[in-house]
Amino acid sequence: MIYVENLRKEFKKTIKEPGLLGSFKSLFHPKSEKIVAVDDISFEVPEGEILGFIGPNGAGKSTVIKMLTGILTPTSGKCTINGKNPTVDRKSYVKEIGVVFGQRTQLWWDLPLRETYGVLKEIYEVPEDRYHKRMAFLNEVLDLESFITSPVRTLSLGQRMRADIAASLLHSPKVLFLDEPTIGLDVVVKDNIRNAIDYINKTEKTTVILTTHDLADIETLSKRIVMIDKGQNVFDGTISELKSKYGQIRELHFDTDTANVEQALAYAEHFGISDDVVTTETDGKSVKVRFNSSVVPVSDMLSYTLGKINVNDISVKDADIEEIIRRLYKQGVQDEEKA
Ligand SMILES: Nc1ncnc2c1ncn2[C@@H]1O[C@H](COP(=O)(O)OP(=O)(O)OP(=O)(O)O)[C@@H](O)[C@H]1O
Ligand SMILES: [Mg+2]
Image (tube, rainbow, N blue to C red; front, side, top):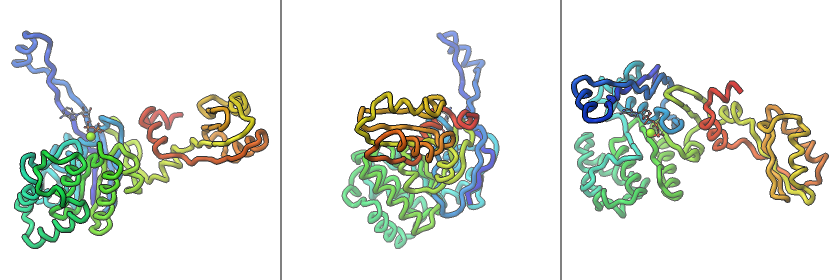
């Protein structure tokens, strides 16, 4: 349904030499520098799926979304959505997709929201009766009623985001591109928006590509993740695959009367391995041991602890996706794979 193949985008940036002479020179002999925003990205999204499209700042996510929505033309490679090429089939293509860029609104700043939707209805040629039904539906899902007569510029960020999402859904698109739809929102509004996306996806089989830095968005909405870094693919798979591939780090927690810092530190010594594999933390009463379970099996860690220390309470925490991704972003996925 969505095919992305070796997509690449280069930008040219003109470099100006310093000073007035520099400005003069660059006016007549502009020098430019090539920026590779997207190097080589490929993935597929089947119909009806919500894909979590993630990566660190500057990875190239928004640039990919802009190519998929026809705002930018790829330097090379190709993408097709429902068999359409976003730049070539632009006119018919825009009716099939919805787009939200959380960082900036696509609504008209001074128009009351209701009138904005009226304009969009004309642009997308939504028939009158369909429009009324759709507005009633969107109002129910996104709760627009209390601010629908207000000019967009007076809306709070949470209201504006709901308004933007409603605008992107007005013409019942088959594919929805959401670039950071929960950025800067409080937990309650984030929840509303996640529920709305989930509901639309379930009831209308809308295919969704979702970019976010909030991993709770991904965990509640998508089973699959495509992760990119420096314009390249670094991971493509389900969340459980991500956990089993990179999530060997576990946390053992226990409470004890006798535990002290030395006892906790004895872990690393016992296993005779580096601090990267086992690290300990204690407040004198409860102890937290982080360990790499592919080097030290969970069962060894448990039996060693129970044999040596009188514990009151013990638990092993599963690999946490937030932790895995933080580690991958920090170190780079390629480095992680070498290790
Ligand atoms: N119009 C442009 N001209 C020059 N460089 C650009 C342009 N747009 C993006 N870039 C560069 O391309 C790279 C990728 O940017 P992009 O906005 O796609 O990243 P992103 O993954 O969306 O990041 P973020 O998580 O911060 O939104 C960055 O280095 C950015 O500076
Ligand atoms: Mg971005």
